[in-house]
Amino acid sequence: MNPDRNIIPTHVKSVHIIAVCGTGMGALAGMFKDAGFEVTGSDEHVYPPMSTLLHGLGIQVFEGFRAENLSYHPDLVVVGNAVSRNNPEVVAMFDRGLHYCSLPQALHRFFMSGKGALVVTGTHGKTTTSALLAWMLVAAGLDPGFMIGGILKNLDRNYHVGQGPYFVVEGDEYDTAFFDKGPKFLHYTPSRAILTSVEFDHADIYRDFDHVKSAFERFVASLPEETLLVGYDQDPVVVQLLAAASCWTAAYGVQASSPWRLGGVRIEPPWTHFEVLKRTERFGRFKTRLIGRHNLMNSLAAIAVADDLRMPPEVISYGLETFEGVKRRQEVRGEKRGVVVIDDFAHHPTAVRETLAAARSFYTGKRLIAVFEPRTNSSMRDVFQKRYVASFDDADLICIRKPPLLHKIPVDQRFSSEQLVHDLTDRGKQAHYFSDTHAIIDYLVGAVEADDVVLIMSNGGFDDIHEKLLDAL
Image (cartoon, rainbow, N blue to C red; front, side, top):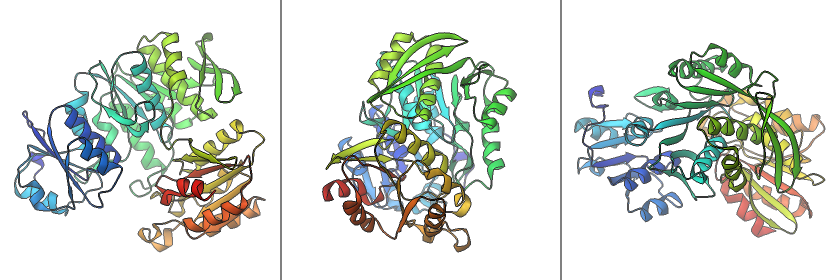
């Protein structure tokens, strides 16, 4: 490996992206194309919707990783964080002496440079909070750039180059690349940052909670003095980090001492109405289609940053009211036979608990059915085996699938769906184990009734269970 080539040359016209079909890498490819670069990419198992999206943008995507994909000697190669050192294209990249970089390096250099970076970090809520903040700026006519880990339903995309003064990015704590094992968010220099929460996650790269905490400590320590750091006042680690920060800070939540506080809340589906207090004074009353207390906190964080950008309360209100949400975040996929089917990305025990609590508060008087697929590197490990048991308290009926990729996890570290169902049953819950998705659909078709709400949680496609269930109904 030649670290001297891990620099971005002054003049770049052509870019090749290794592992282009990931959510972030595909977005980066689209941004490069929109900015006028020649763009190619490669990946394994190229299929819709990303293949269709990239083809529609005029980006050539090579099926499979091969040295000849770099035969045109692109000016820059962007390497995805899931790509290994022995990837054939990486080997060819080094053999040919090509310049290379990571996704956050490219994003910082080409699209964030000279702009006020608005970085949203934390274990939970990054996608919704950054999407809401980006939409507020769009609705205010400020044409922000942004890259987010979910599709904004208002715009049907998760990226935009933008000509305005701000760039919103979801600051990921996951590692950057095989040649840079530090968190992605260390590559950004925010003018404003949000820290929603700090919990143990990503068990494939972090040893324990202290290891995760150290990554966020590095992030906060790296912030310039003039940066505003907005943090959640109910998370003890966030509170510690705010106290230790050398930059400007502002807490949000419910503590009387916090500059930004949530006031009264009233739920009138499809709206949630809420009051916001700024330093004990009423800042405004707002309404949103987002559901759940956690989303009110996400909204509060976005409001705090928007206010620091001198956005008037009435403009903030318009952005909140018109925000349609993010795909796969409490997204209603359809209704058949009076049964509502919802798709959500929840996979961490805290996210599962908060998502179910949100659905319970919004769909009052209805039976809530939770369907869960453990799929992440953390949820397929036994690190959260016991914590998941209390996460399903708000569900009336629970369906747990066997992890679909369990063979990737060492035998002595594997999560057990059967054990979770056993523990849920001991807790007095009606829970069932299923070895595959088809069995869940067959069961639900016979078990659901009119007015039921089926909340399906997975960070993956879950074998398209949402559409298959609706079709079966």
